[in-house]
Picture 1 (tube, one colour):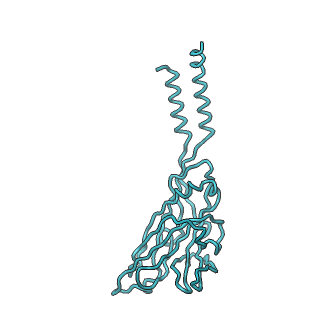
Picture 2 (cartoon, one colour; picture 1 turned 180 degrees about the horizontal axis):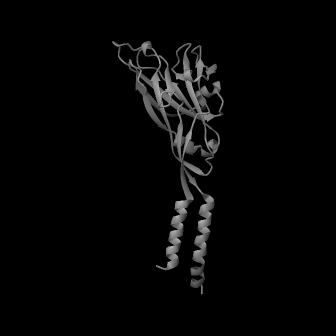
Picture 3 (cartoon, one colour; picture 1 turned 180 degrees about the vertical axis):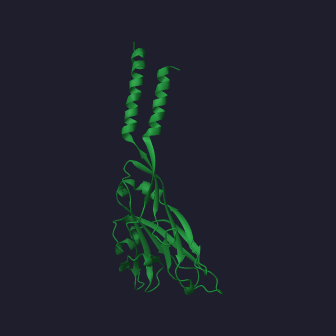
Length: 232
């Protein structure tokens, strides 16, 4: 193989290596709040921004809540999100409500939805028509109220809506479904430290277009002498 061929292969390999860069980004929520339906009619009238009230439960009259978080995403116009993980803890904040030593534990299930947020606590964020379901999670409450840890990946939704979400807000909502037996005491959504708000962790592969273009031009410079000789 000619020297120019070796050089060409090396430059193209270098362009692939340098043309992409992986970065890890940790995002705190811009807002975290609970939308409250005080009458149980399915219409959420108010929101509660107090972190202590970041609770969620289904349509219990006077106490129906949906928990919302919104994250400001970086510029993703030239990036692919390899992974977008929300590591969360969900646990009951009122274990005496339905579980005593002599009672069976009850299953609690939550739909986890996404929506296009605006960085502001707003009752419209509870509108299920604007939400897209990503998955659901469940836990069995116990008398001690131990936290339950989950890791949710939102990368598919972000990549599918990359341009619309670039530099904008990703909203995530937790919607409580009916519990399996018994009443329903509120559950709390927190980070895995059980205190702070959950963080969104992004792993982003970014294409460095200027670097790739420069290396392609270098490749062309290597190829030109060979092209000239072949055309003689």
